Amino acid sequence: MTSGADRFVIGLDFGTDSVRAVVVRVADGKEIADAAASYPRWAKGRYCDPTRQMFRHHPADYLEAMTEVVGKALAGRRAIADAVVGLGVDTTGSSPLPVSSDARALALYDEFAEDPDAMCILWKDHTAVAEAEDINALSRTGRFPDYTRYVGGIYSSEWYWAKILHIGRHNPRIFQAAASWVELCDWIPAVLTGVKDAAAVVRSRCAAGHKALWHPSFGGLPSRDWLVALDPCLGNLPTPMFTETRTSDQAAGLLTAEWAAAFGLPAGIPVAVGAFDCHIGAVGAGIEPYSLVRVMGTSTCDILVAPPEEVGDTVVRGICGQVPDSVLPGYVGFEAGQSSFGDVFAWFDRLLRWGREETVTPGGLLPRLEEEARALPPGAFGERALDWLNGRRTPDADQTVRAMVAGLHLGSSAASIYRTLVEATAFGSRAIVERFESEGIAVKHVVAIGGIARKSPFITQVCADVMNREIGVAESDQCCARGAAIFAAAAAGRYPDVHQAKAAMLSPIEKVFKPDPRAHEAYGAIYTDYLAIGAFAQQMAGR
Image (cartoon, rainbow, N blue to C red; front, side, top):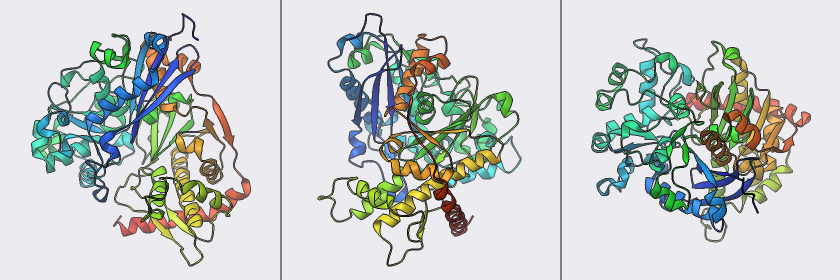
């Protein structure tokens, strides 16, 4: 039962494998319902080639899955649906897609429907390594302002311009058909609000600042001269592609009658400006200054905010950017992360299941492995690993480096190898914290959200032991969707600002993992090995 005064908001979280929806009560953040819907084409492995590190989403997957998921979340809740006052969106990123002049995704046209280059280039797609290298090389020439200054000084193949340039060089047909390129977190709100002009798509401060090299000190995006110097094909893009960016406490527009009917919601409710899942999730977990909020999923994304007057001229090297107001208005938002985290364990699971996929439930081996690995000491039987199965995001982005497992012997077991993979991901986490602090940005608290944080106490405990820090785990399974709902409440004017919305609607901490001093001491020497193996891997990659 709900009172007549109750109002609700919906948060949509577009992840790698599925979209999640959560219905949240505005007054206190209570989650009324949640649901998930998988992407049908993605689930069949279509438009992807892991051997080339090519991962694409068909935009029709998003439209079909979000229609399904909102219907699931609101099923049998007519009174609640009628009382929904806003909708918020977060997505993976950087995940840009080409659009026509009317802001329609190219892959939704019959002539481009089967071309992967017309689709959303997923965050984990690494086909643009060469293009990222060219961006970094141009930035080092001194001919232009260093546009990579506020993204850690290194541009990544996972990001906006590298992916656009890759399509420009390798698929002129698609590149010439595209009127513009839009991040997924900007495209979904544009669809829901009926935007029919690519130039009118509202651009997220979060996505533009952390991935597209937008920054106030540059007056916006890199100059046309820089783009042409990078590759003349970029001179065909609209320049600047956009100038204004907005934070997610603002409305991108109003829900159209068509989408309201599809969802069973009131037409004309505000749709908040979109942002990346990790940034939004950090707000859902109640991020405070100098708290590192870690989204522990297929990869990790680590978010921190700090007051601009305390950040001053500090620029942190080798992270995924620092941008004013990108996470919370009034604060500088910092982003770091690991290119593979849960994907490391999923890879090992697939490896062990080879040849018997029909008899083993996907993921079914991991609980047994965790049980055995937990009983082993730090370092197991001397095995060591590097977690860069999908390259390295931070510190110092490099998608050419590869993972390693060393120290194998006839006594090595599946459980001991699994444990060393867990430890490797924890060491990658420690390296991120050390980079922040060595650059002058304190990490005072660590909060974990995401499926791994809540479902694997073993992994979270190893992270706490390796970093020698308490890790608080947020209660909600849907912190990213909840964060989107918080911004929806602010954009709908239900709170004076997003800070008050966050305070009322955040997810509380469910459990705190305390580091074991003896385990941390043991991990000290193993971490030294991890760094040495990392240096060797870089040498092998020609770095």
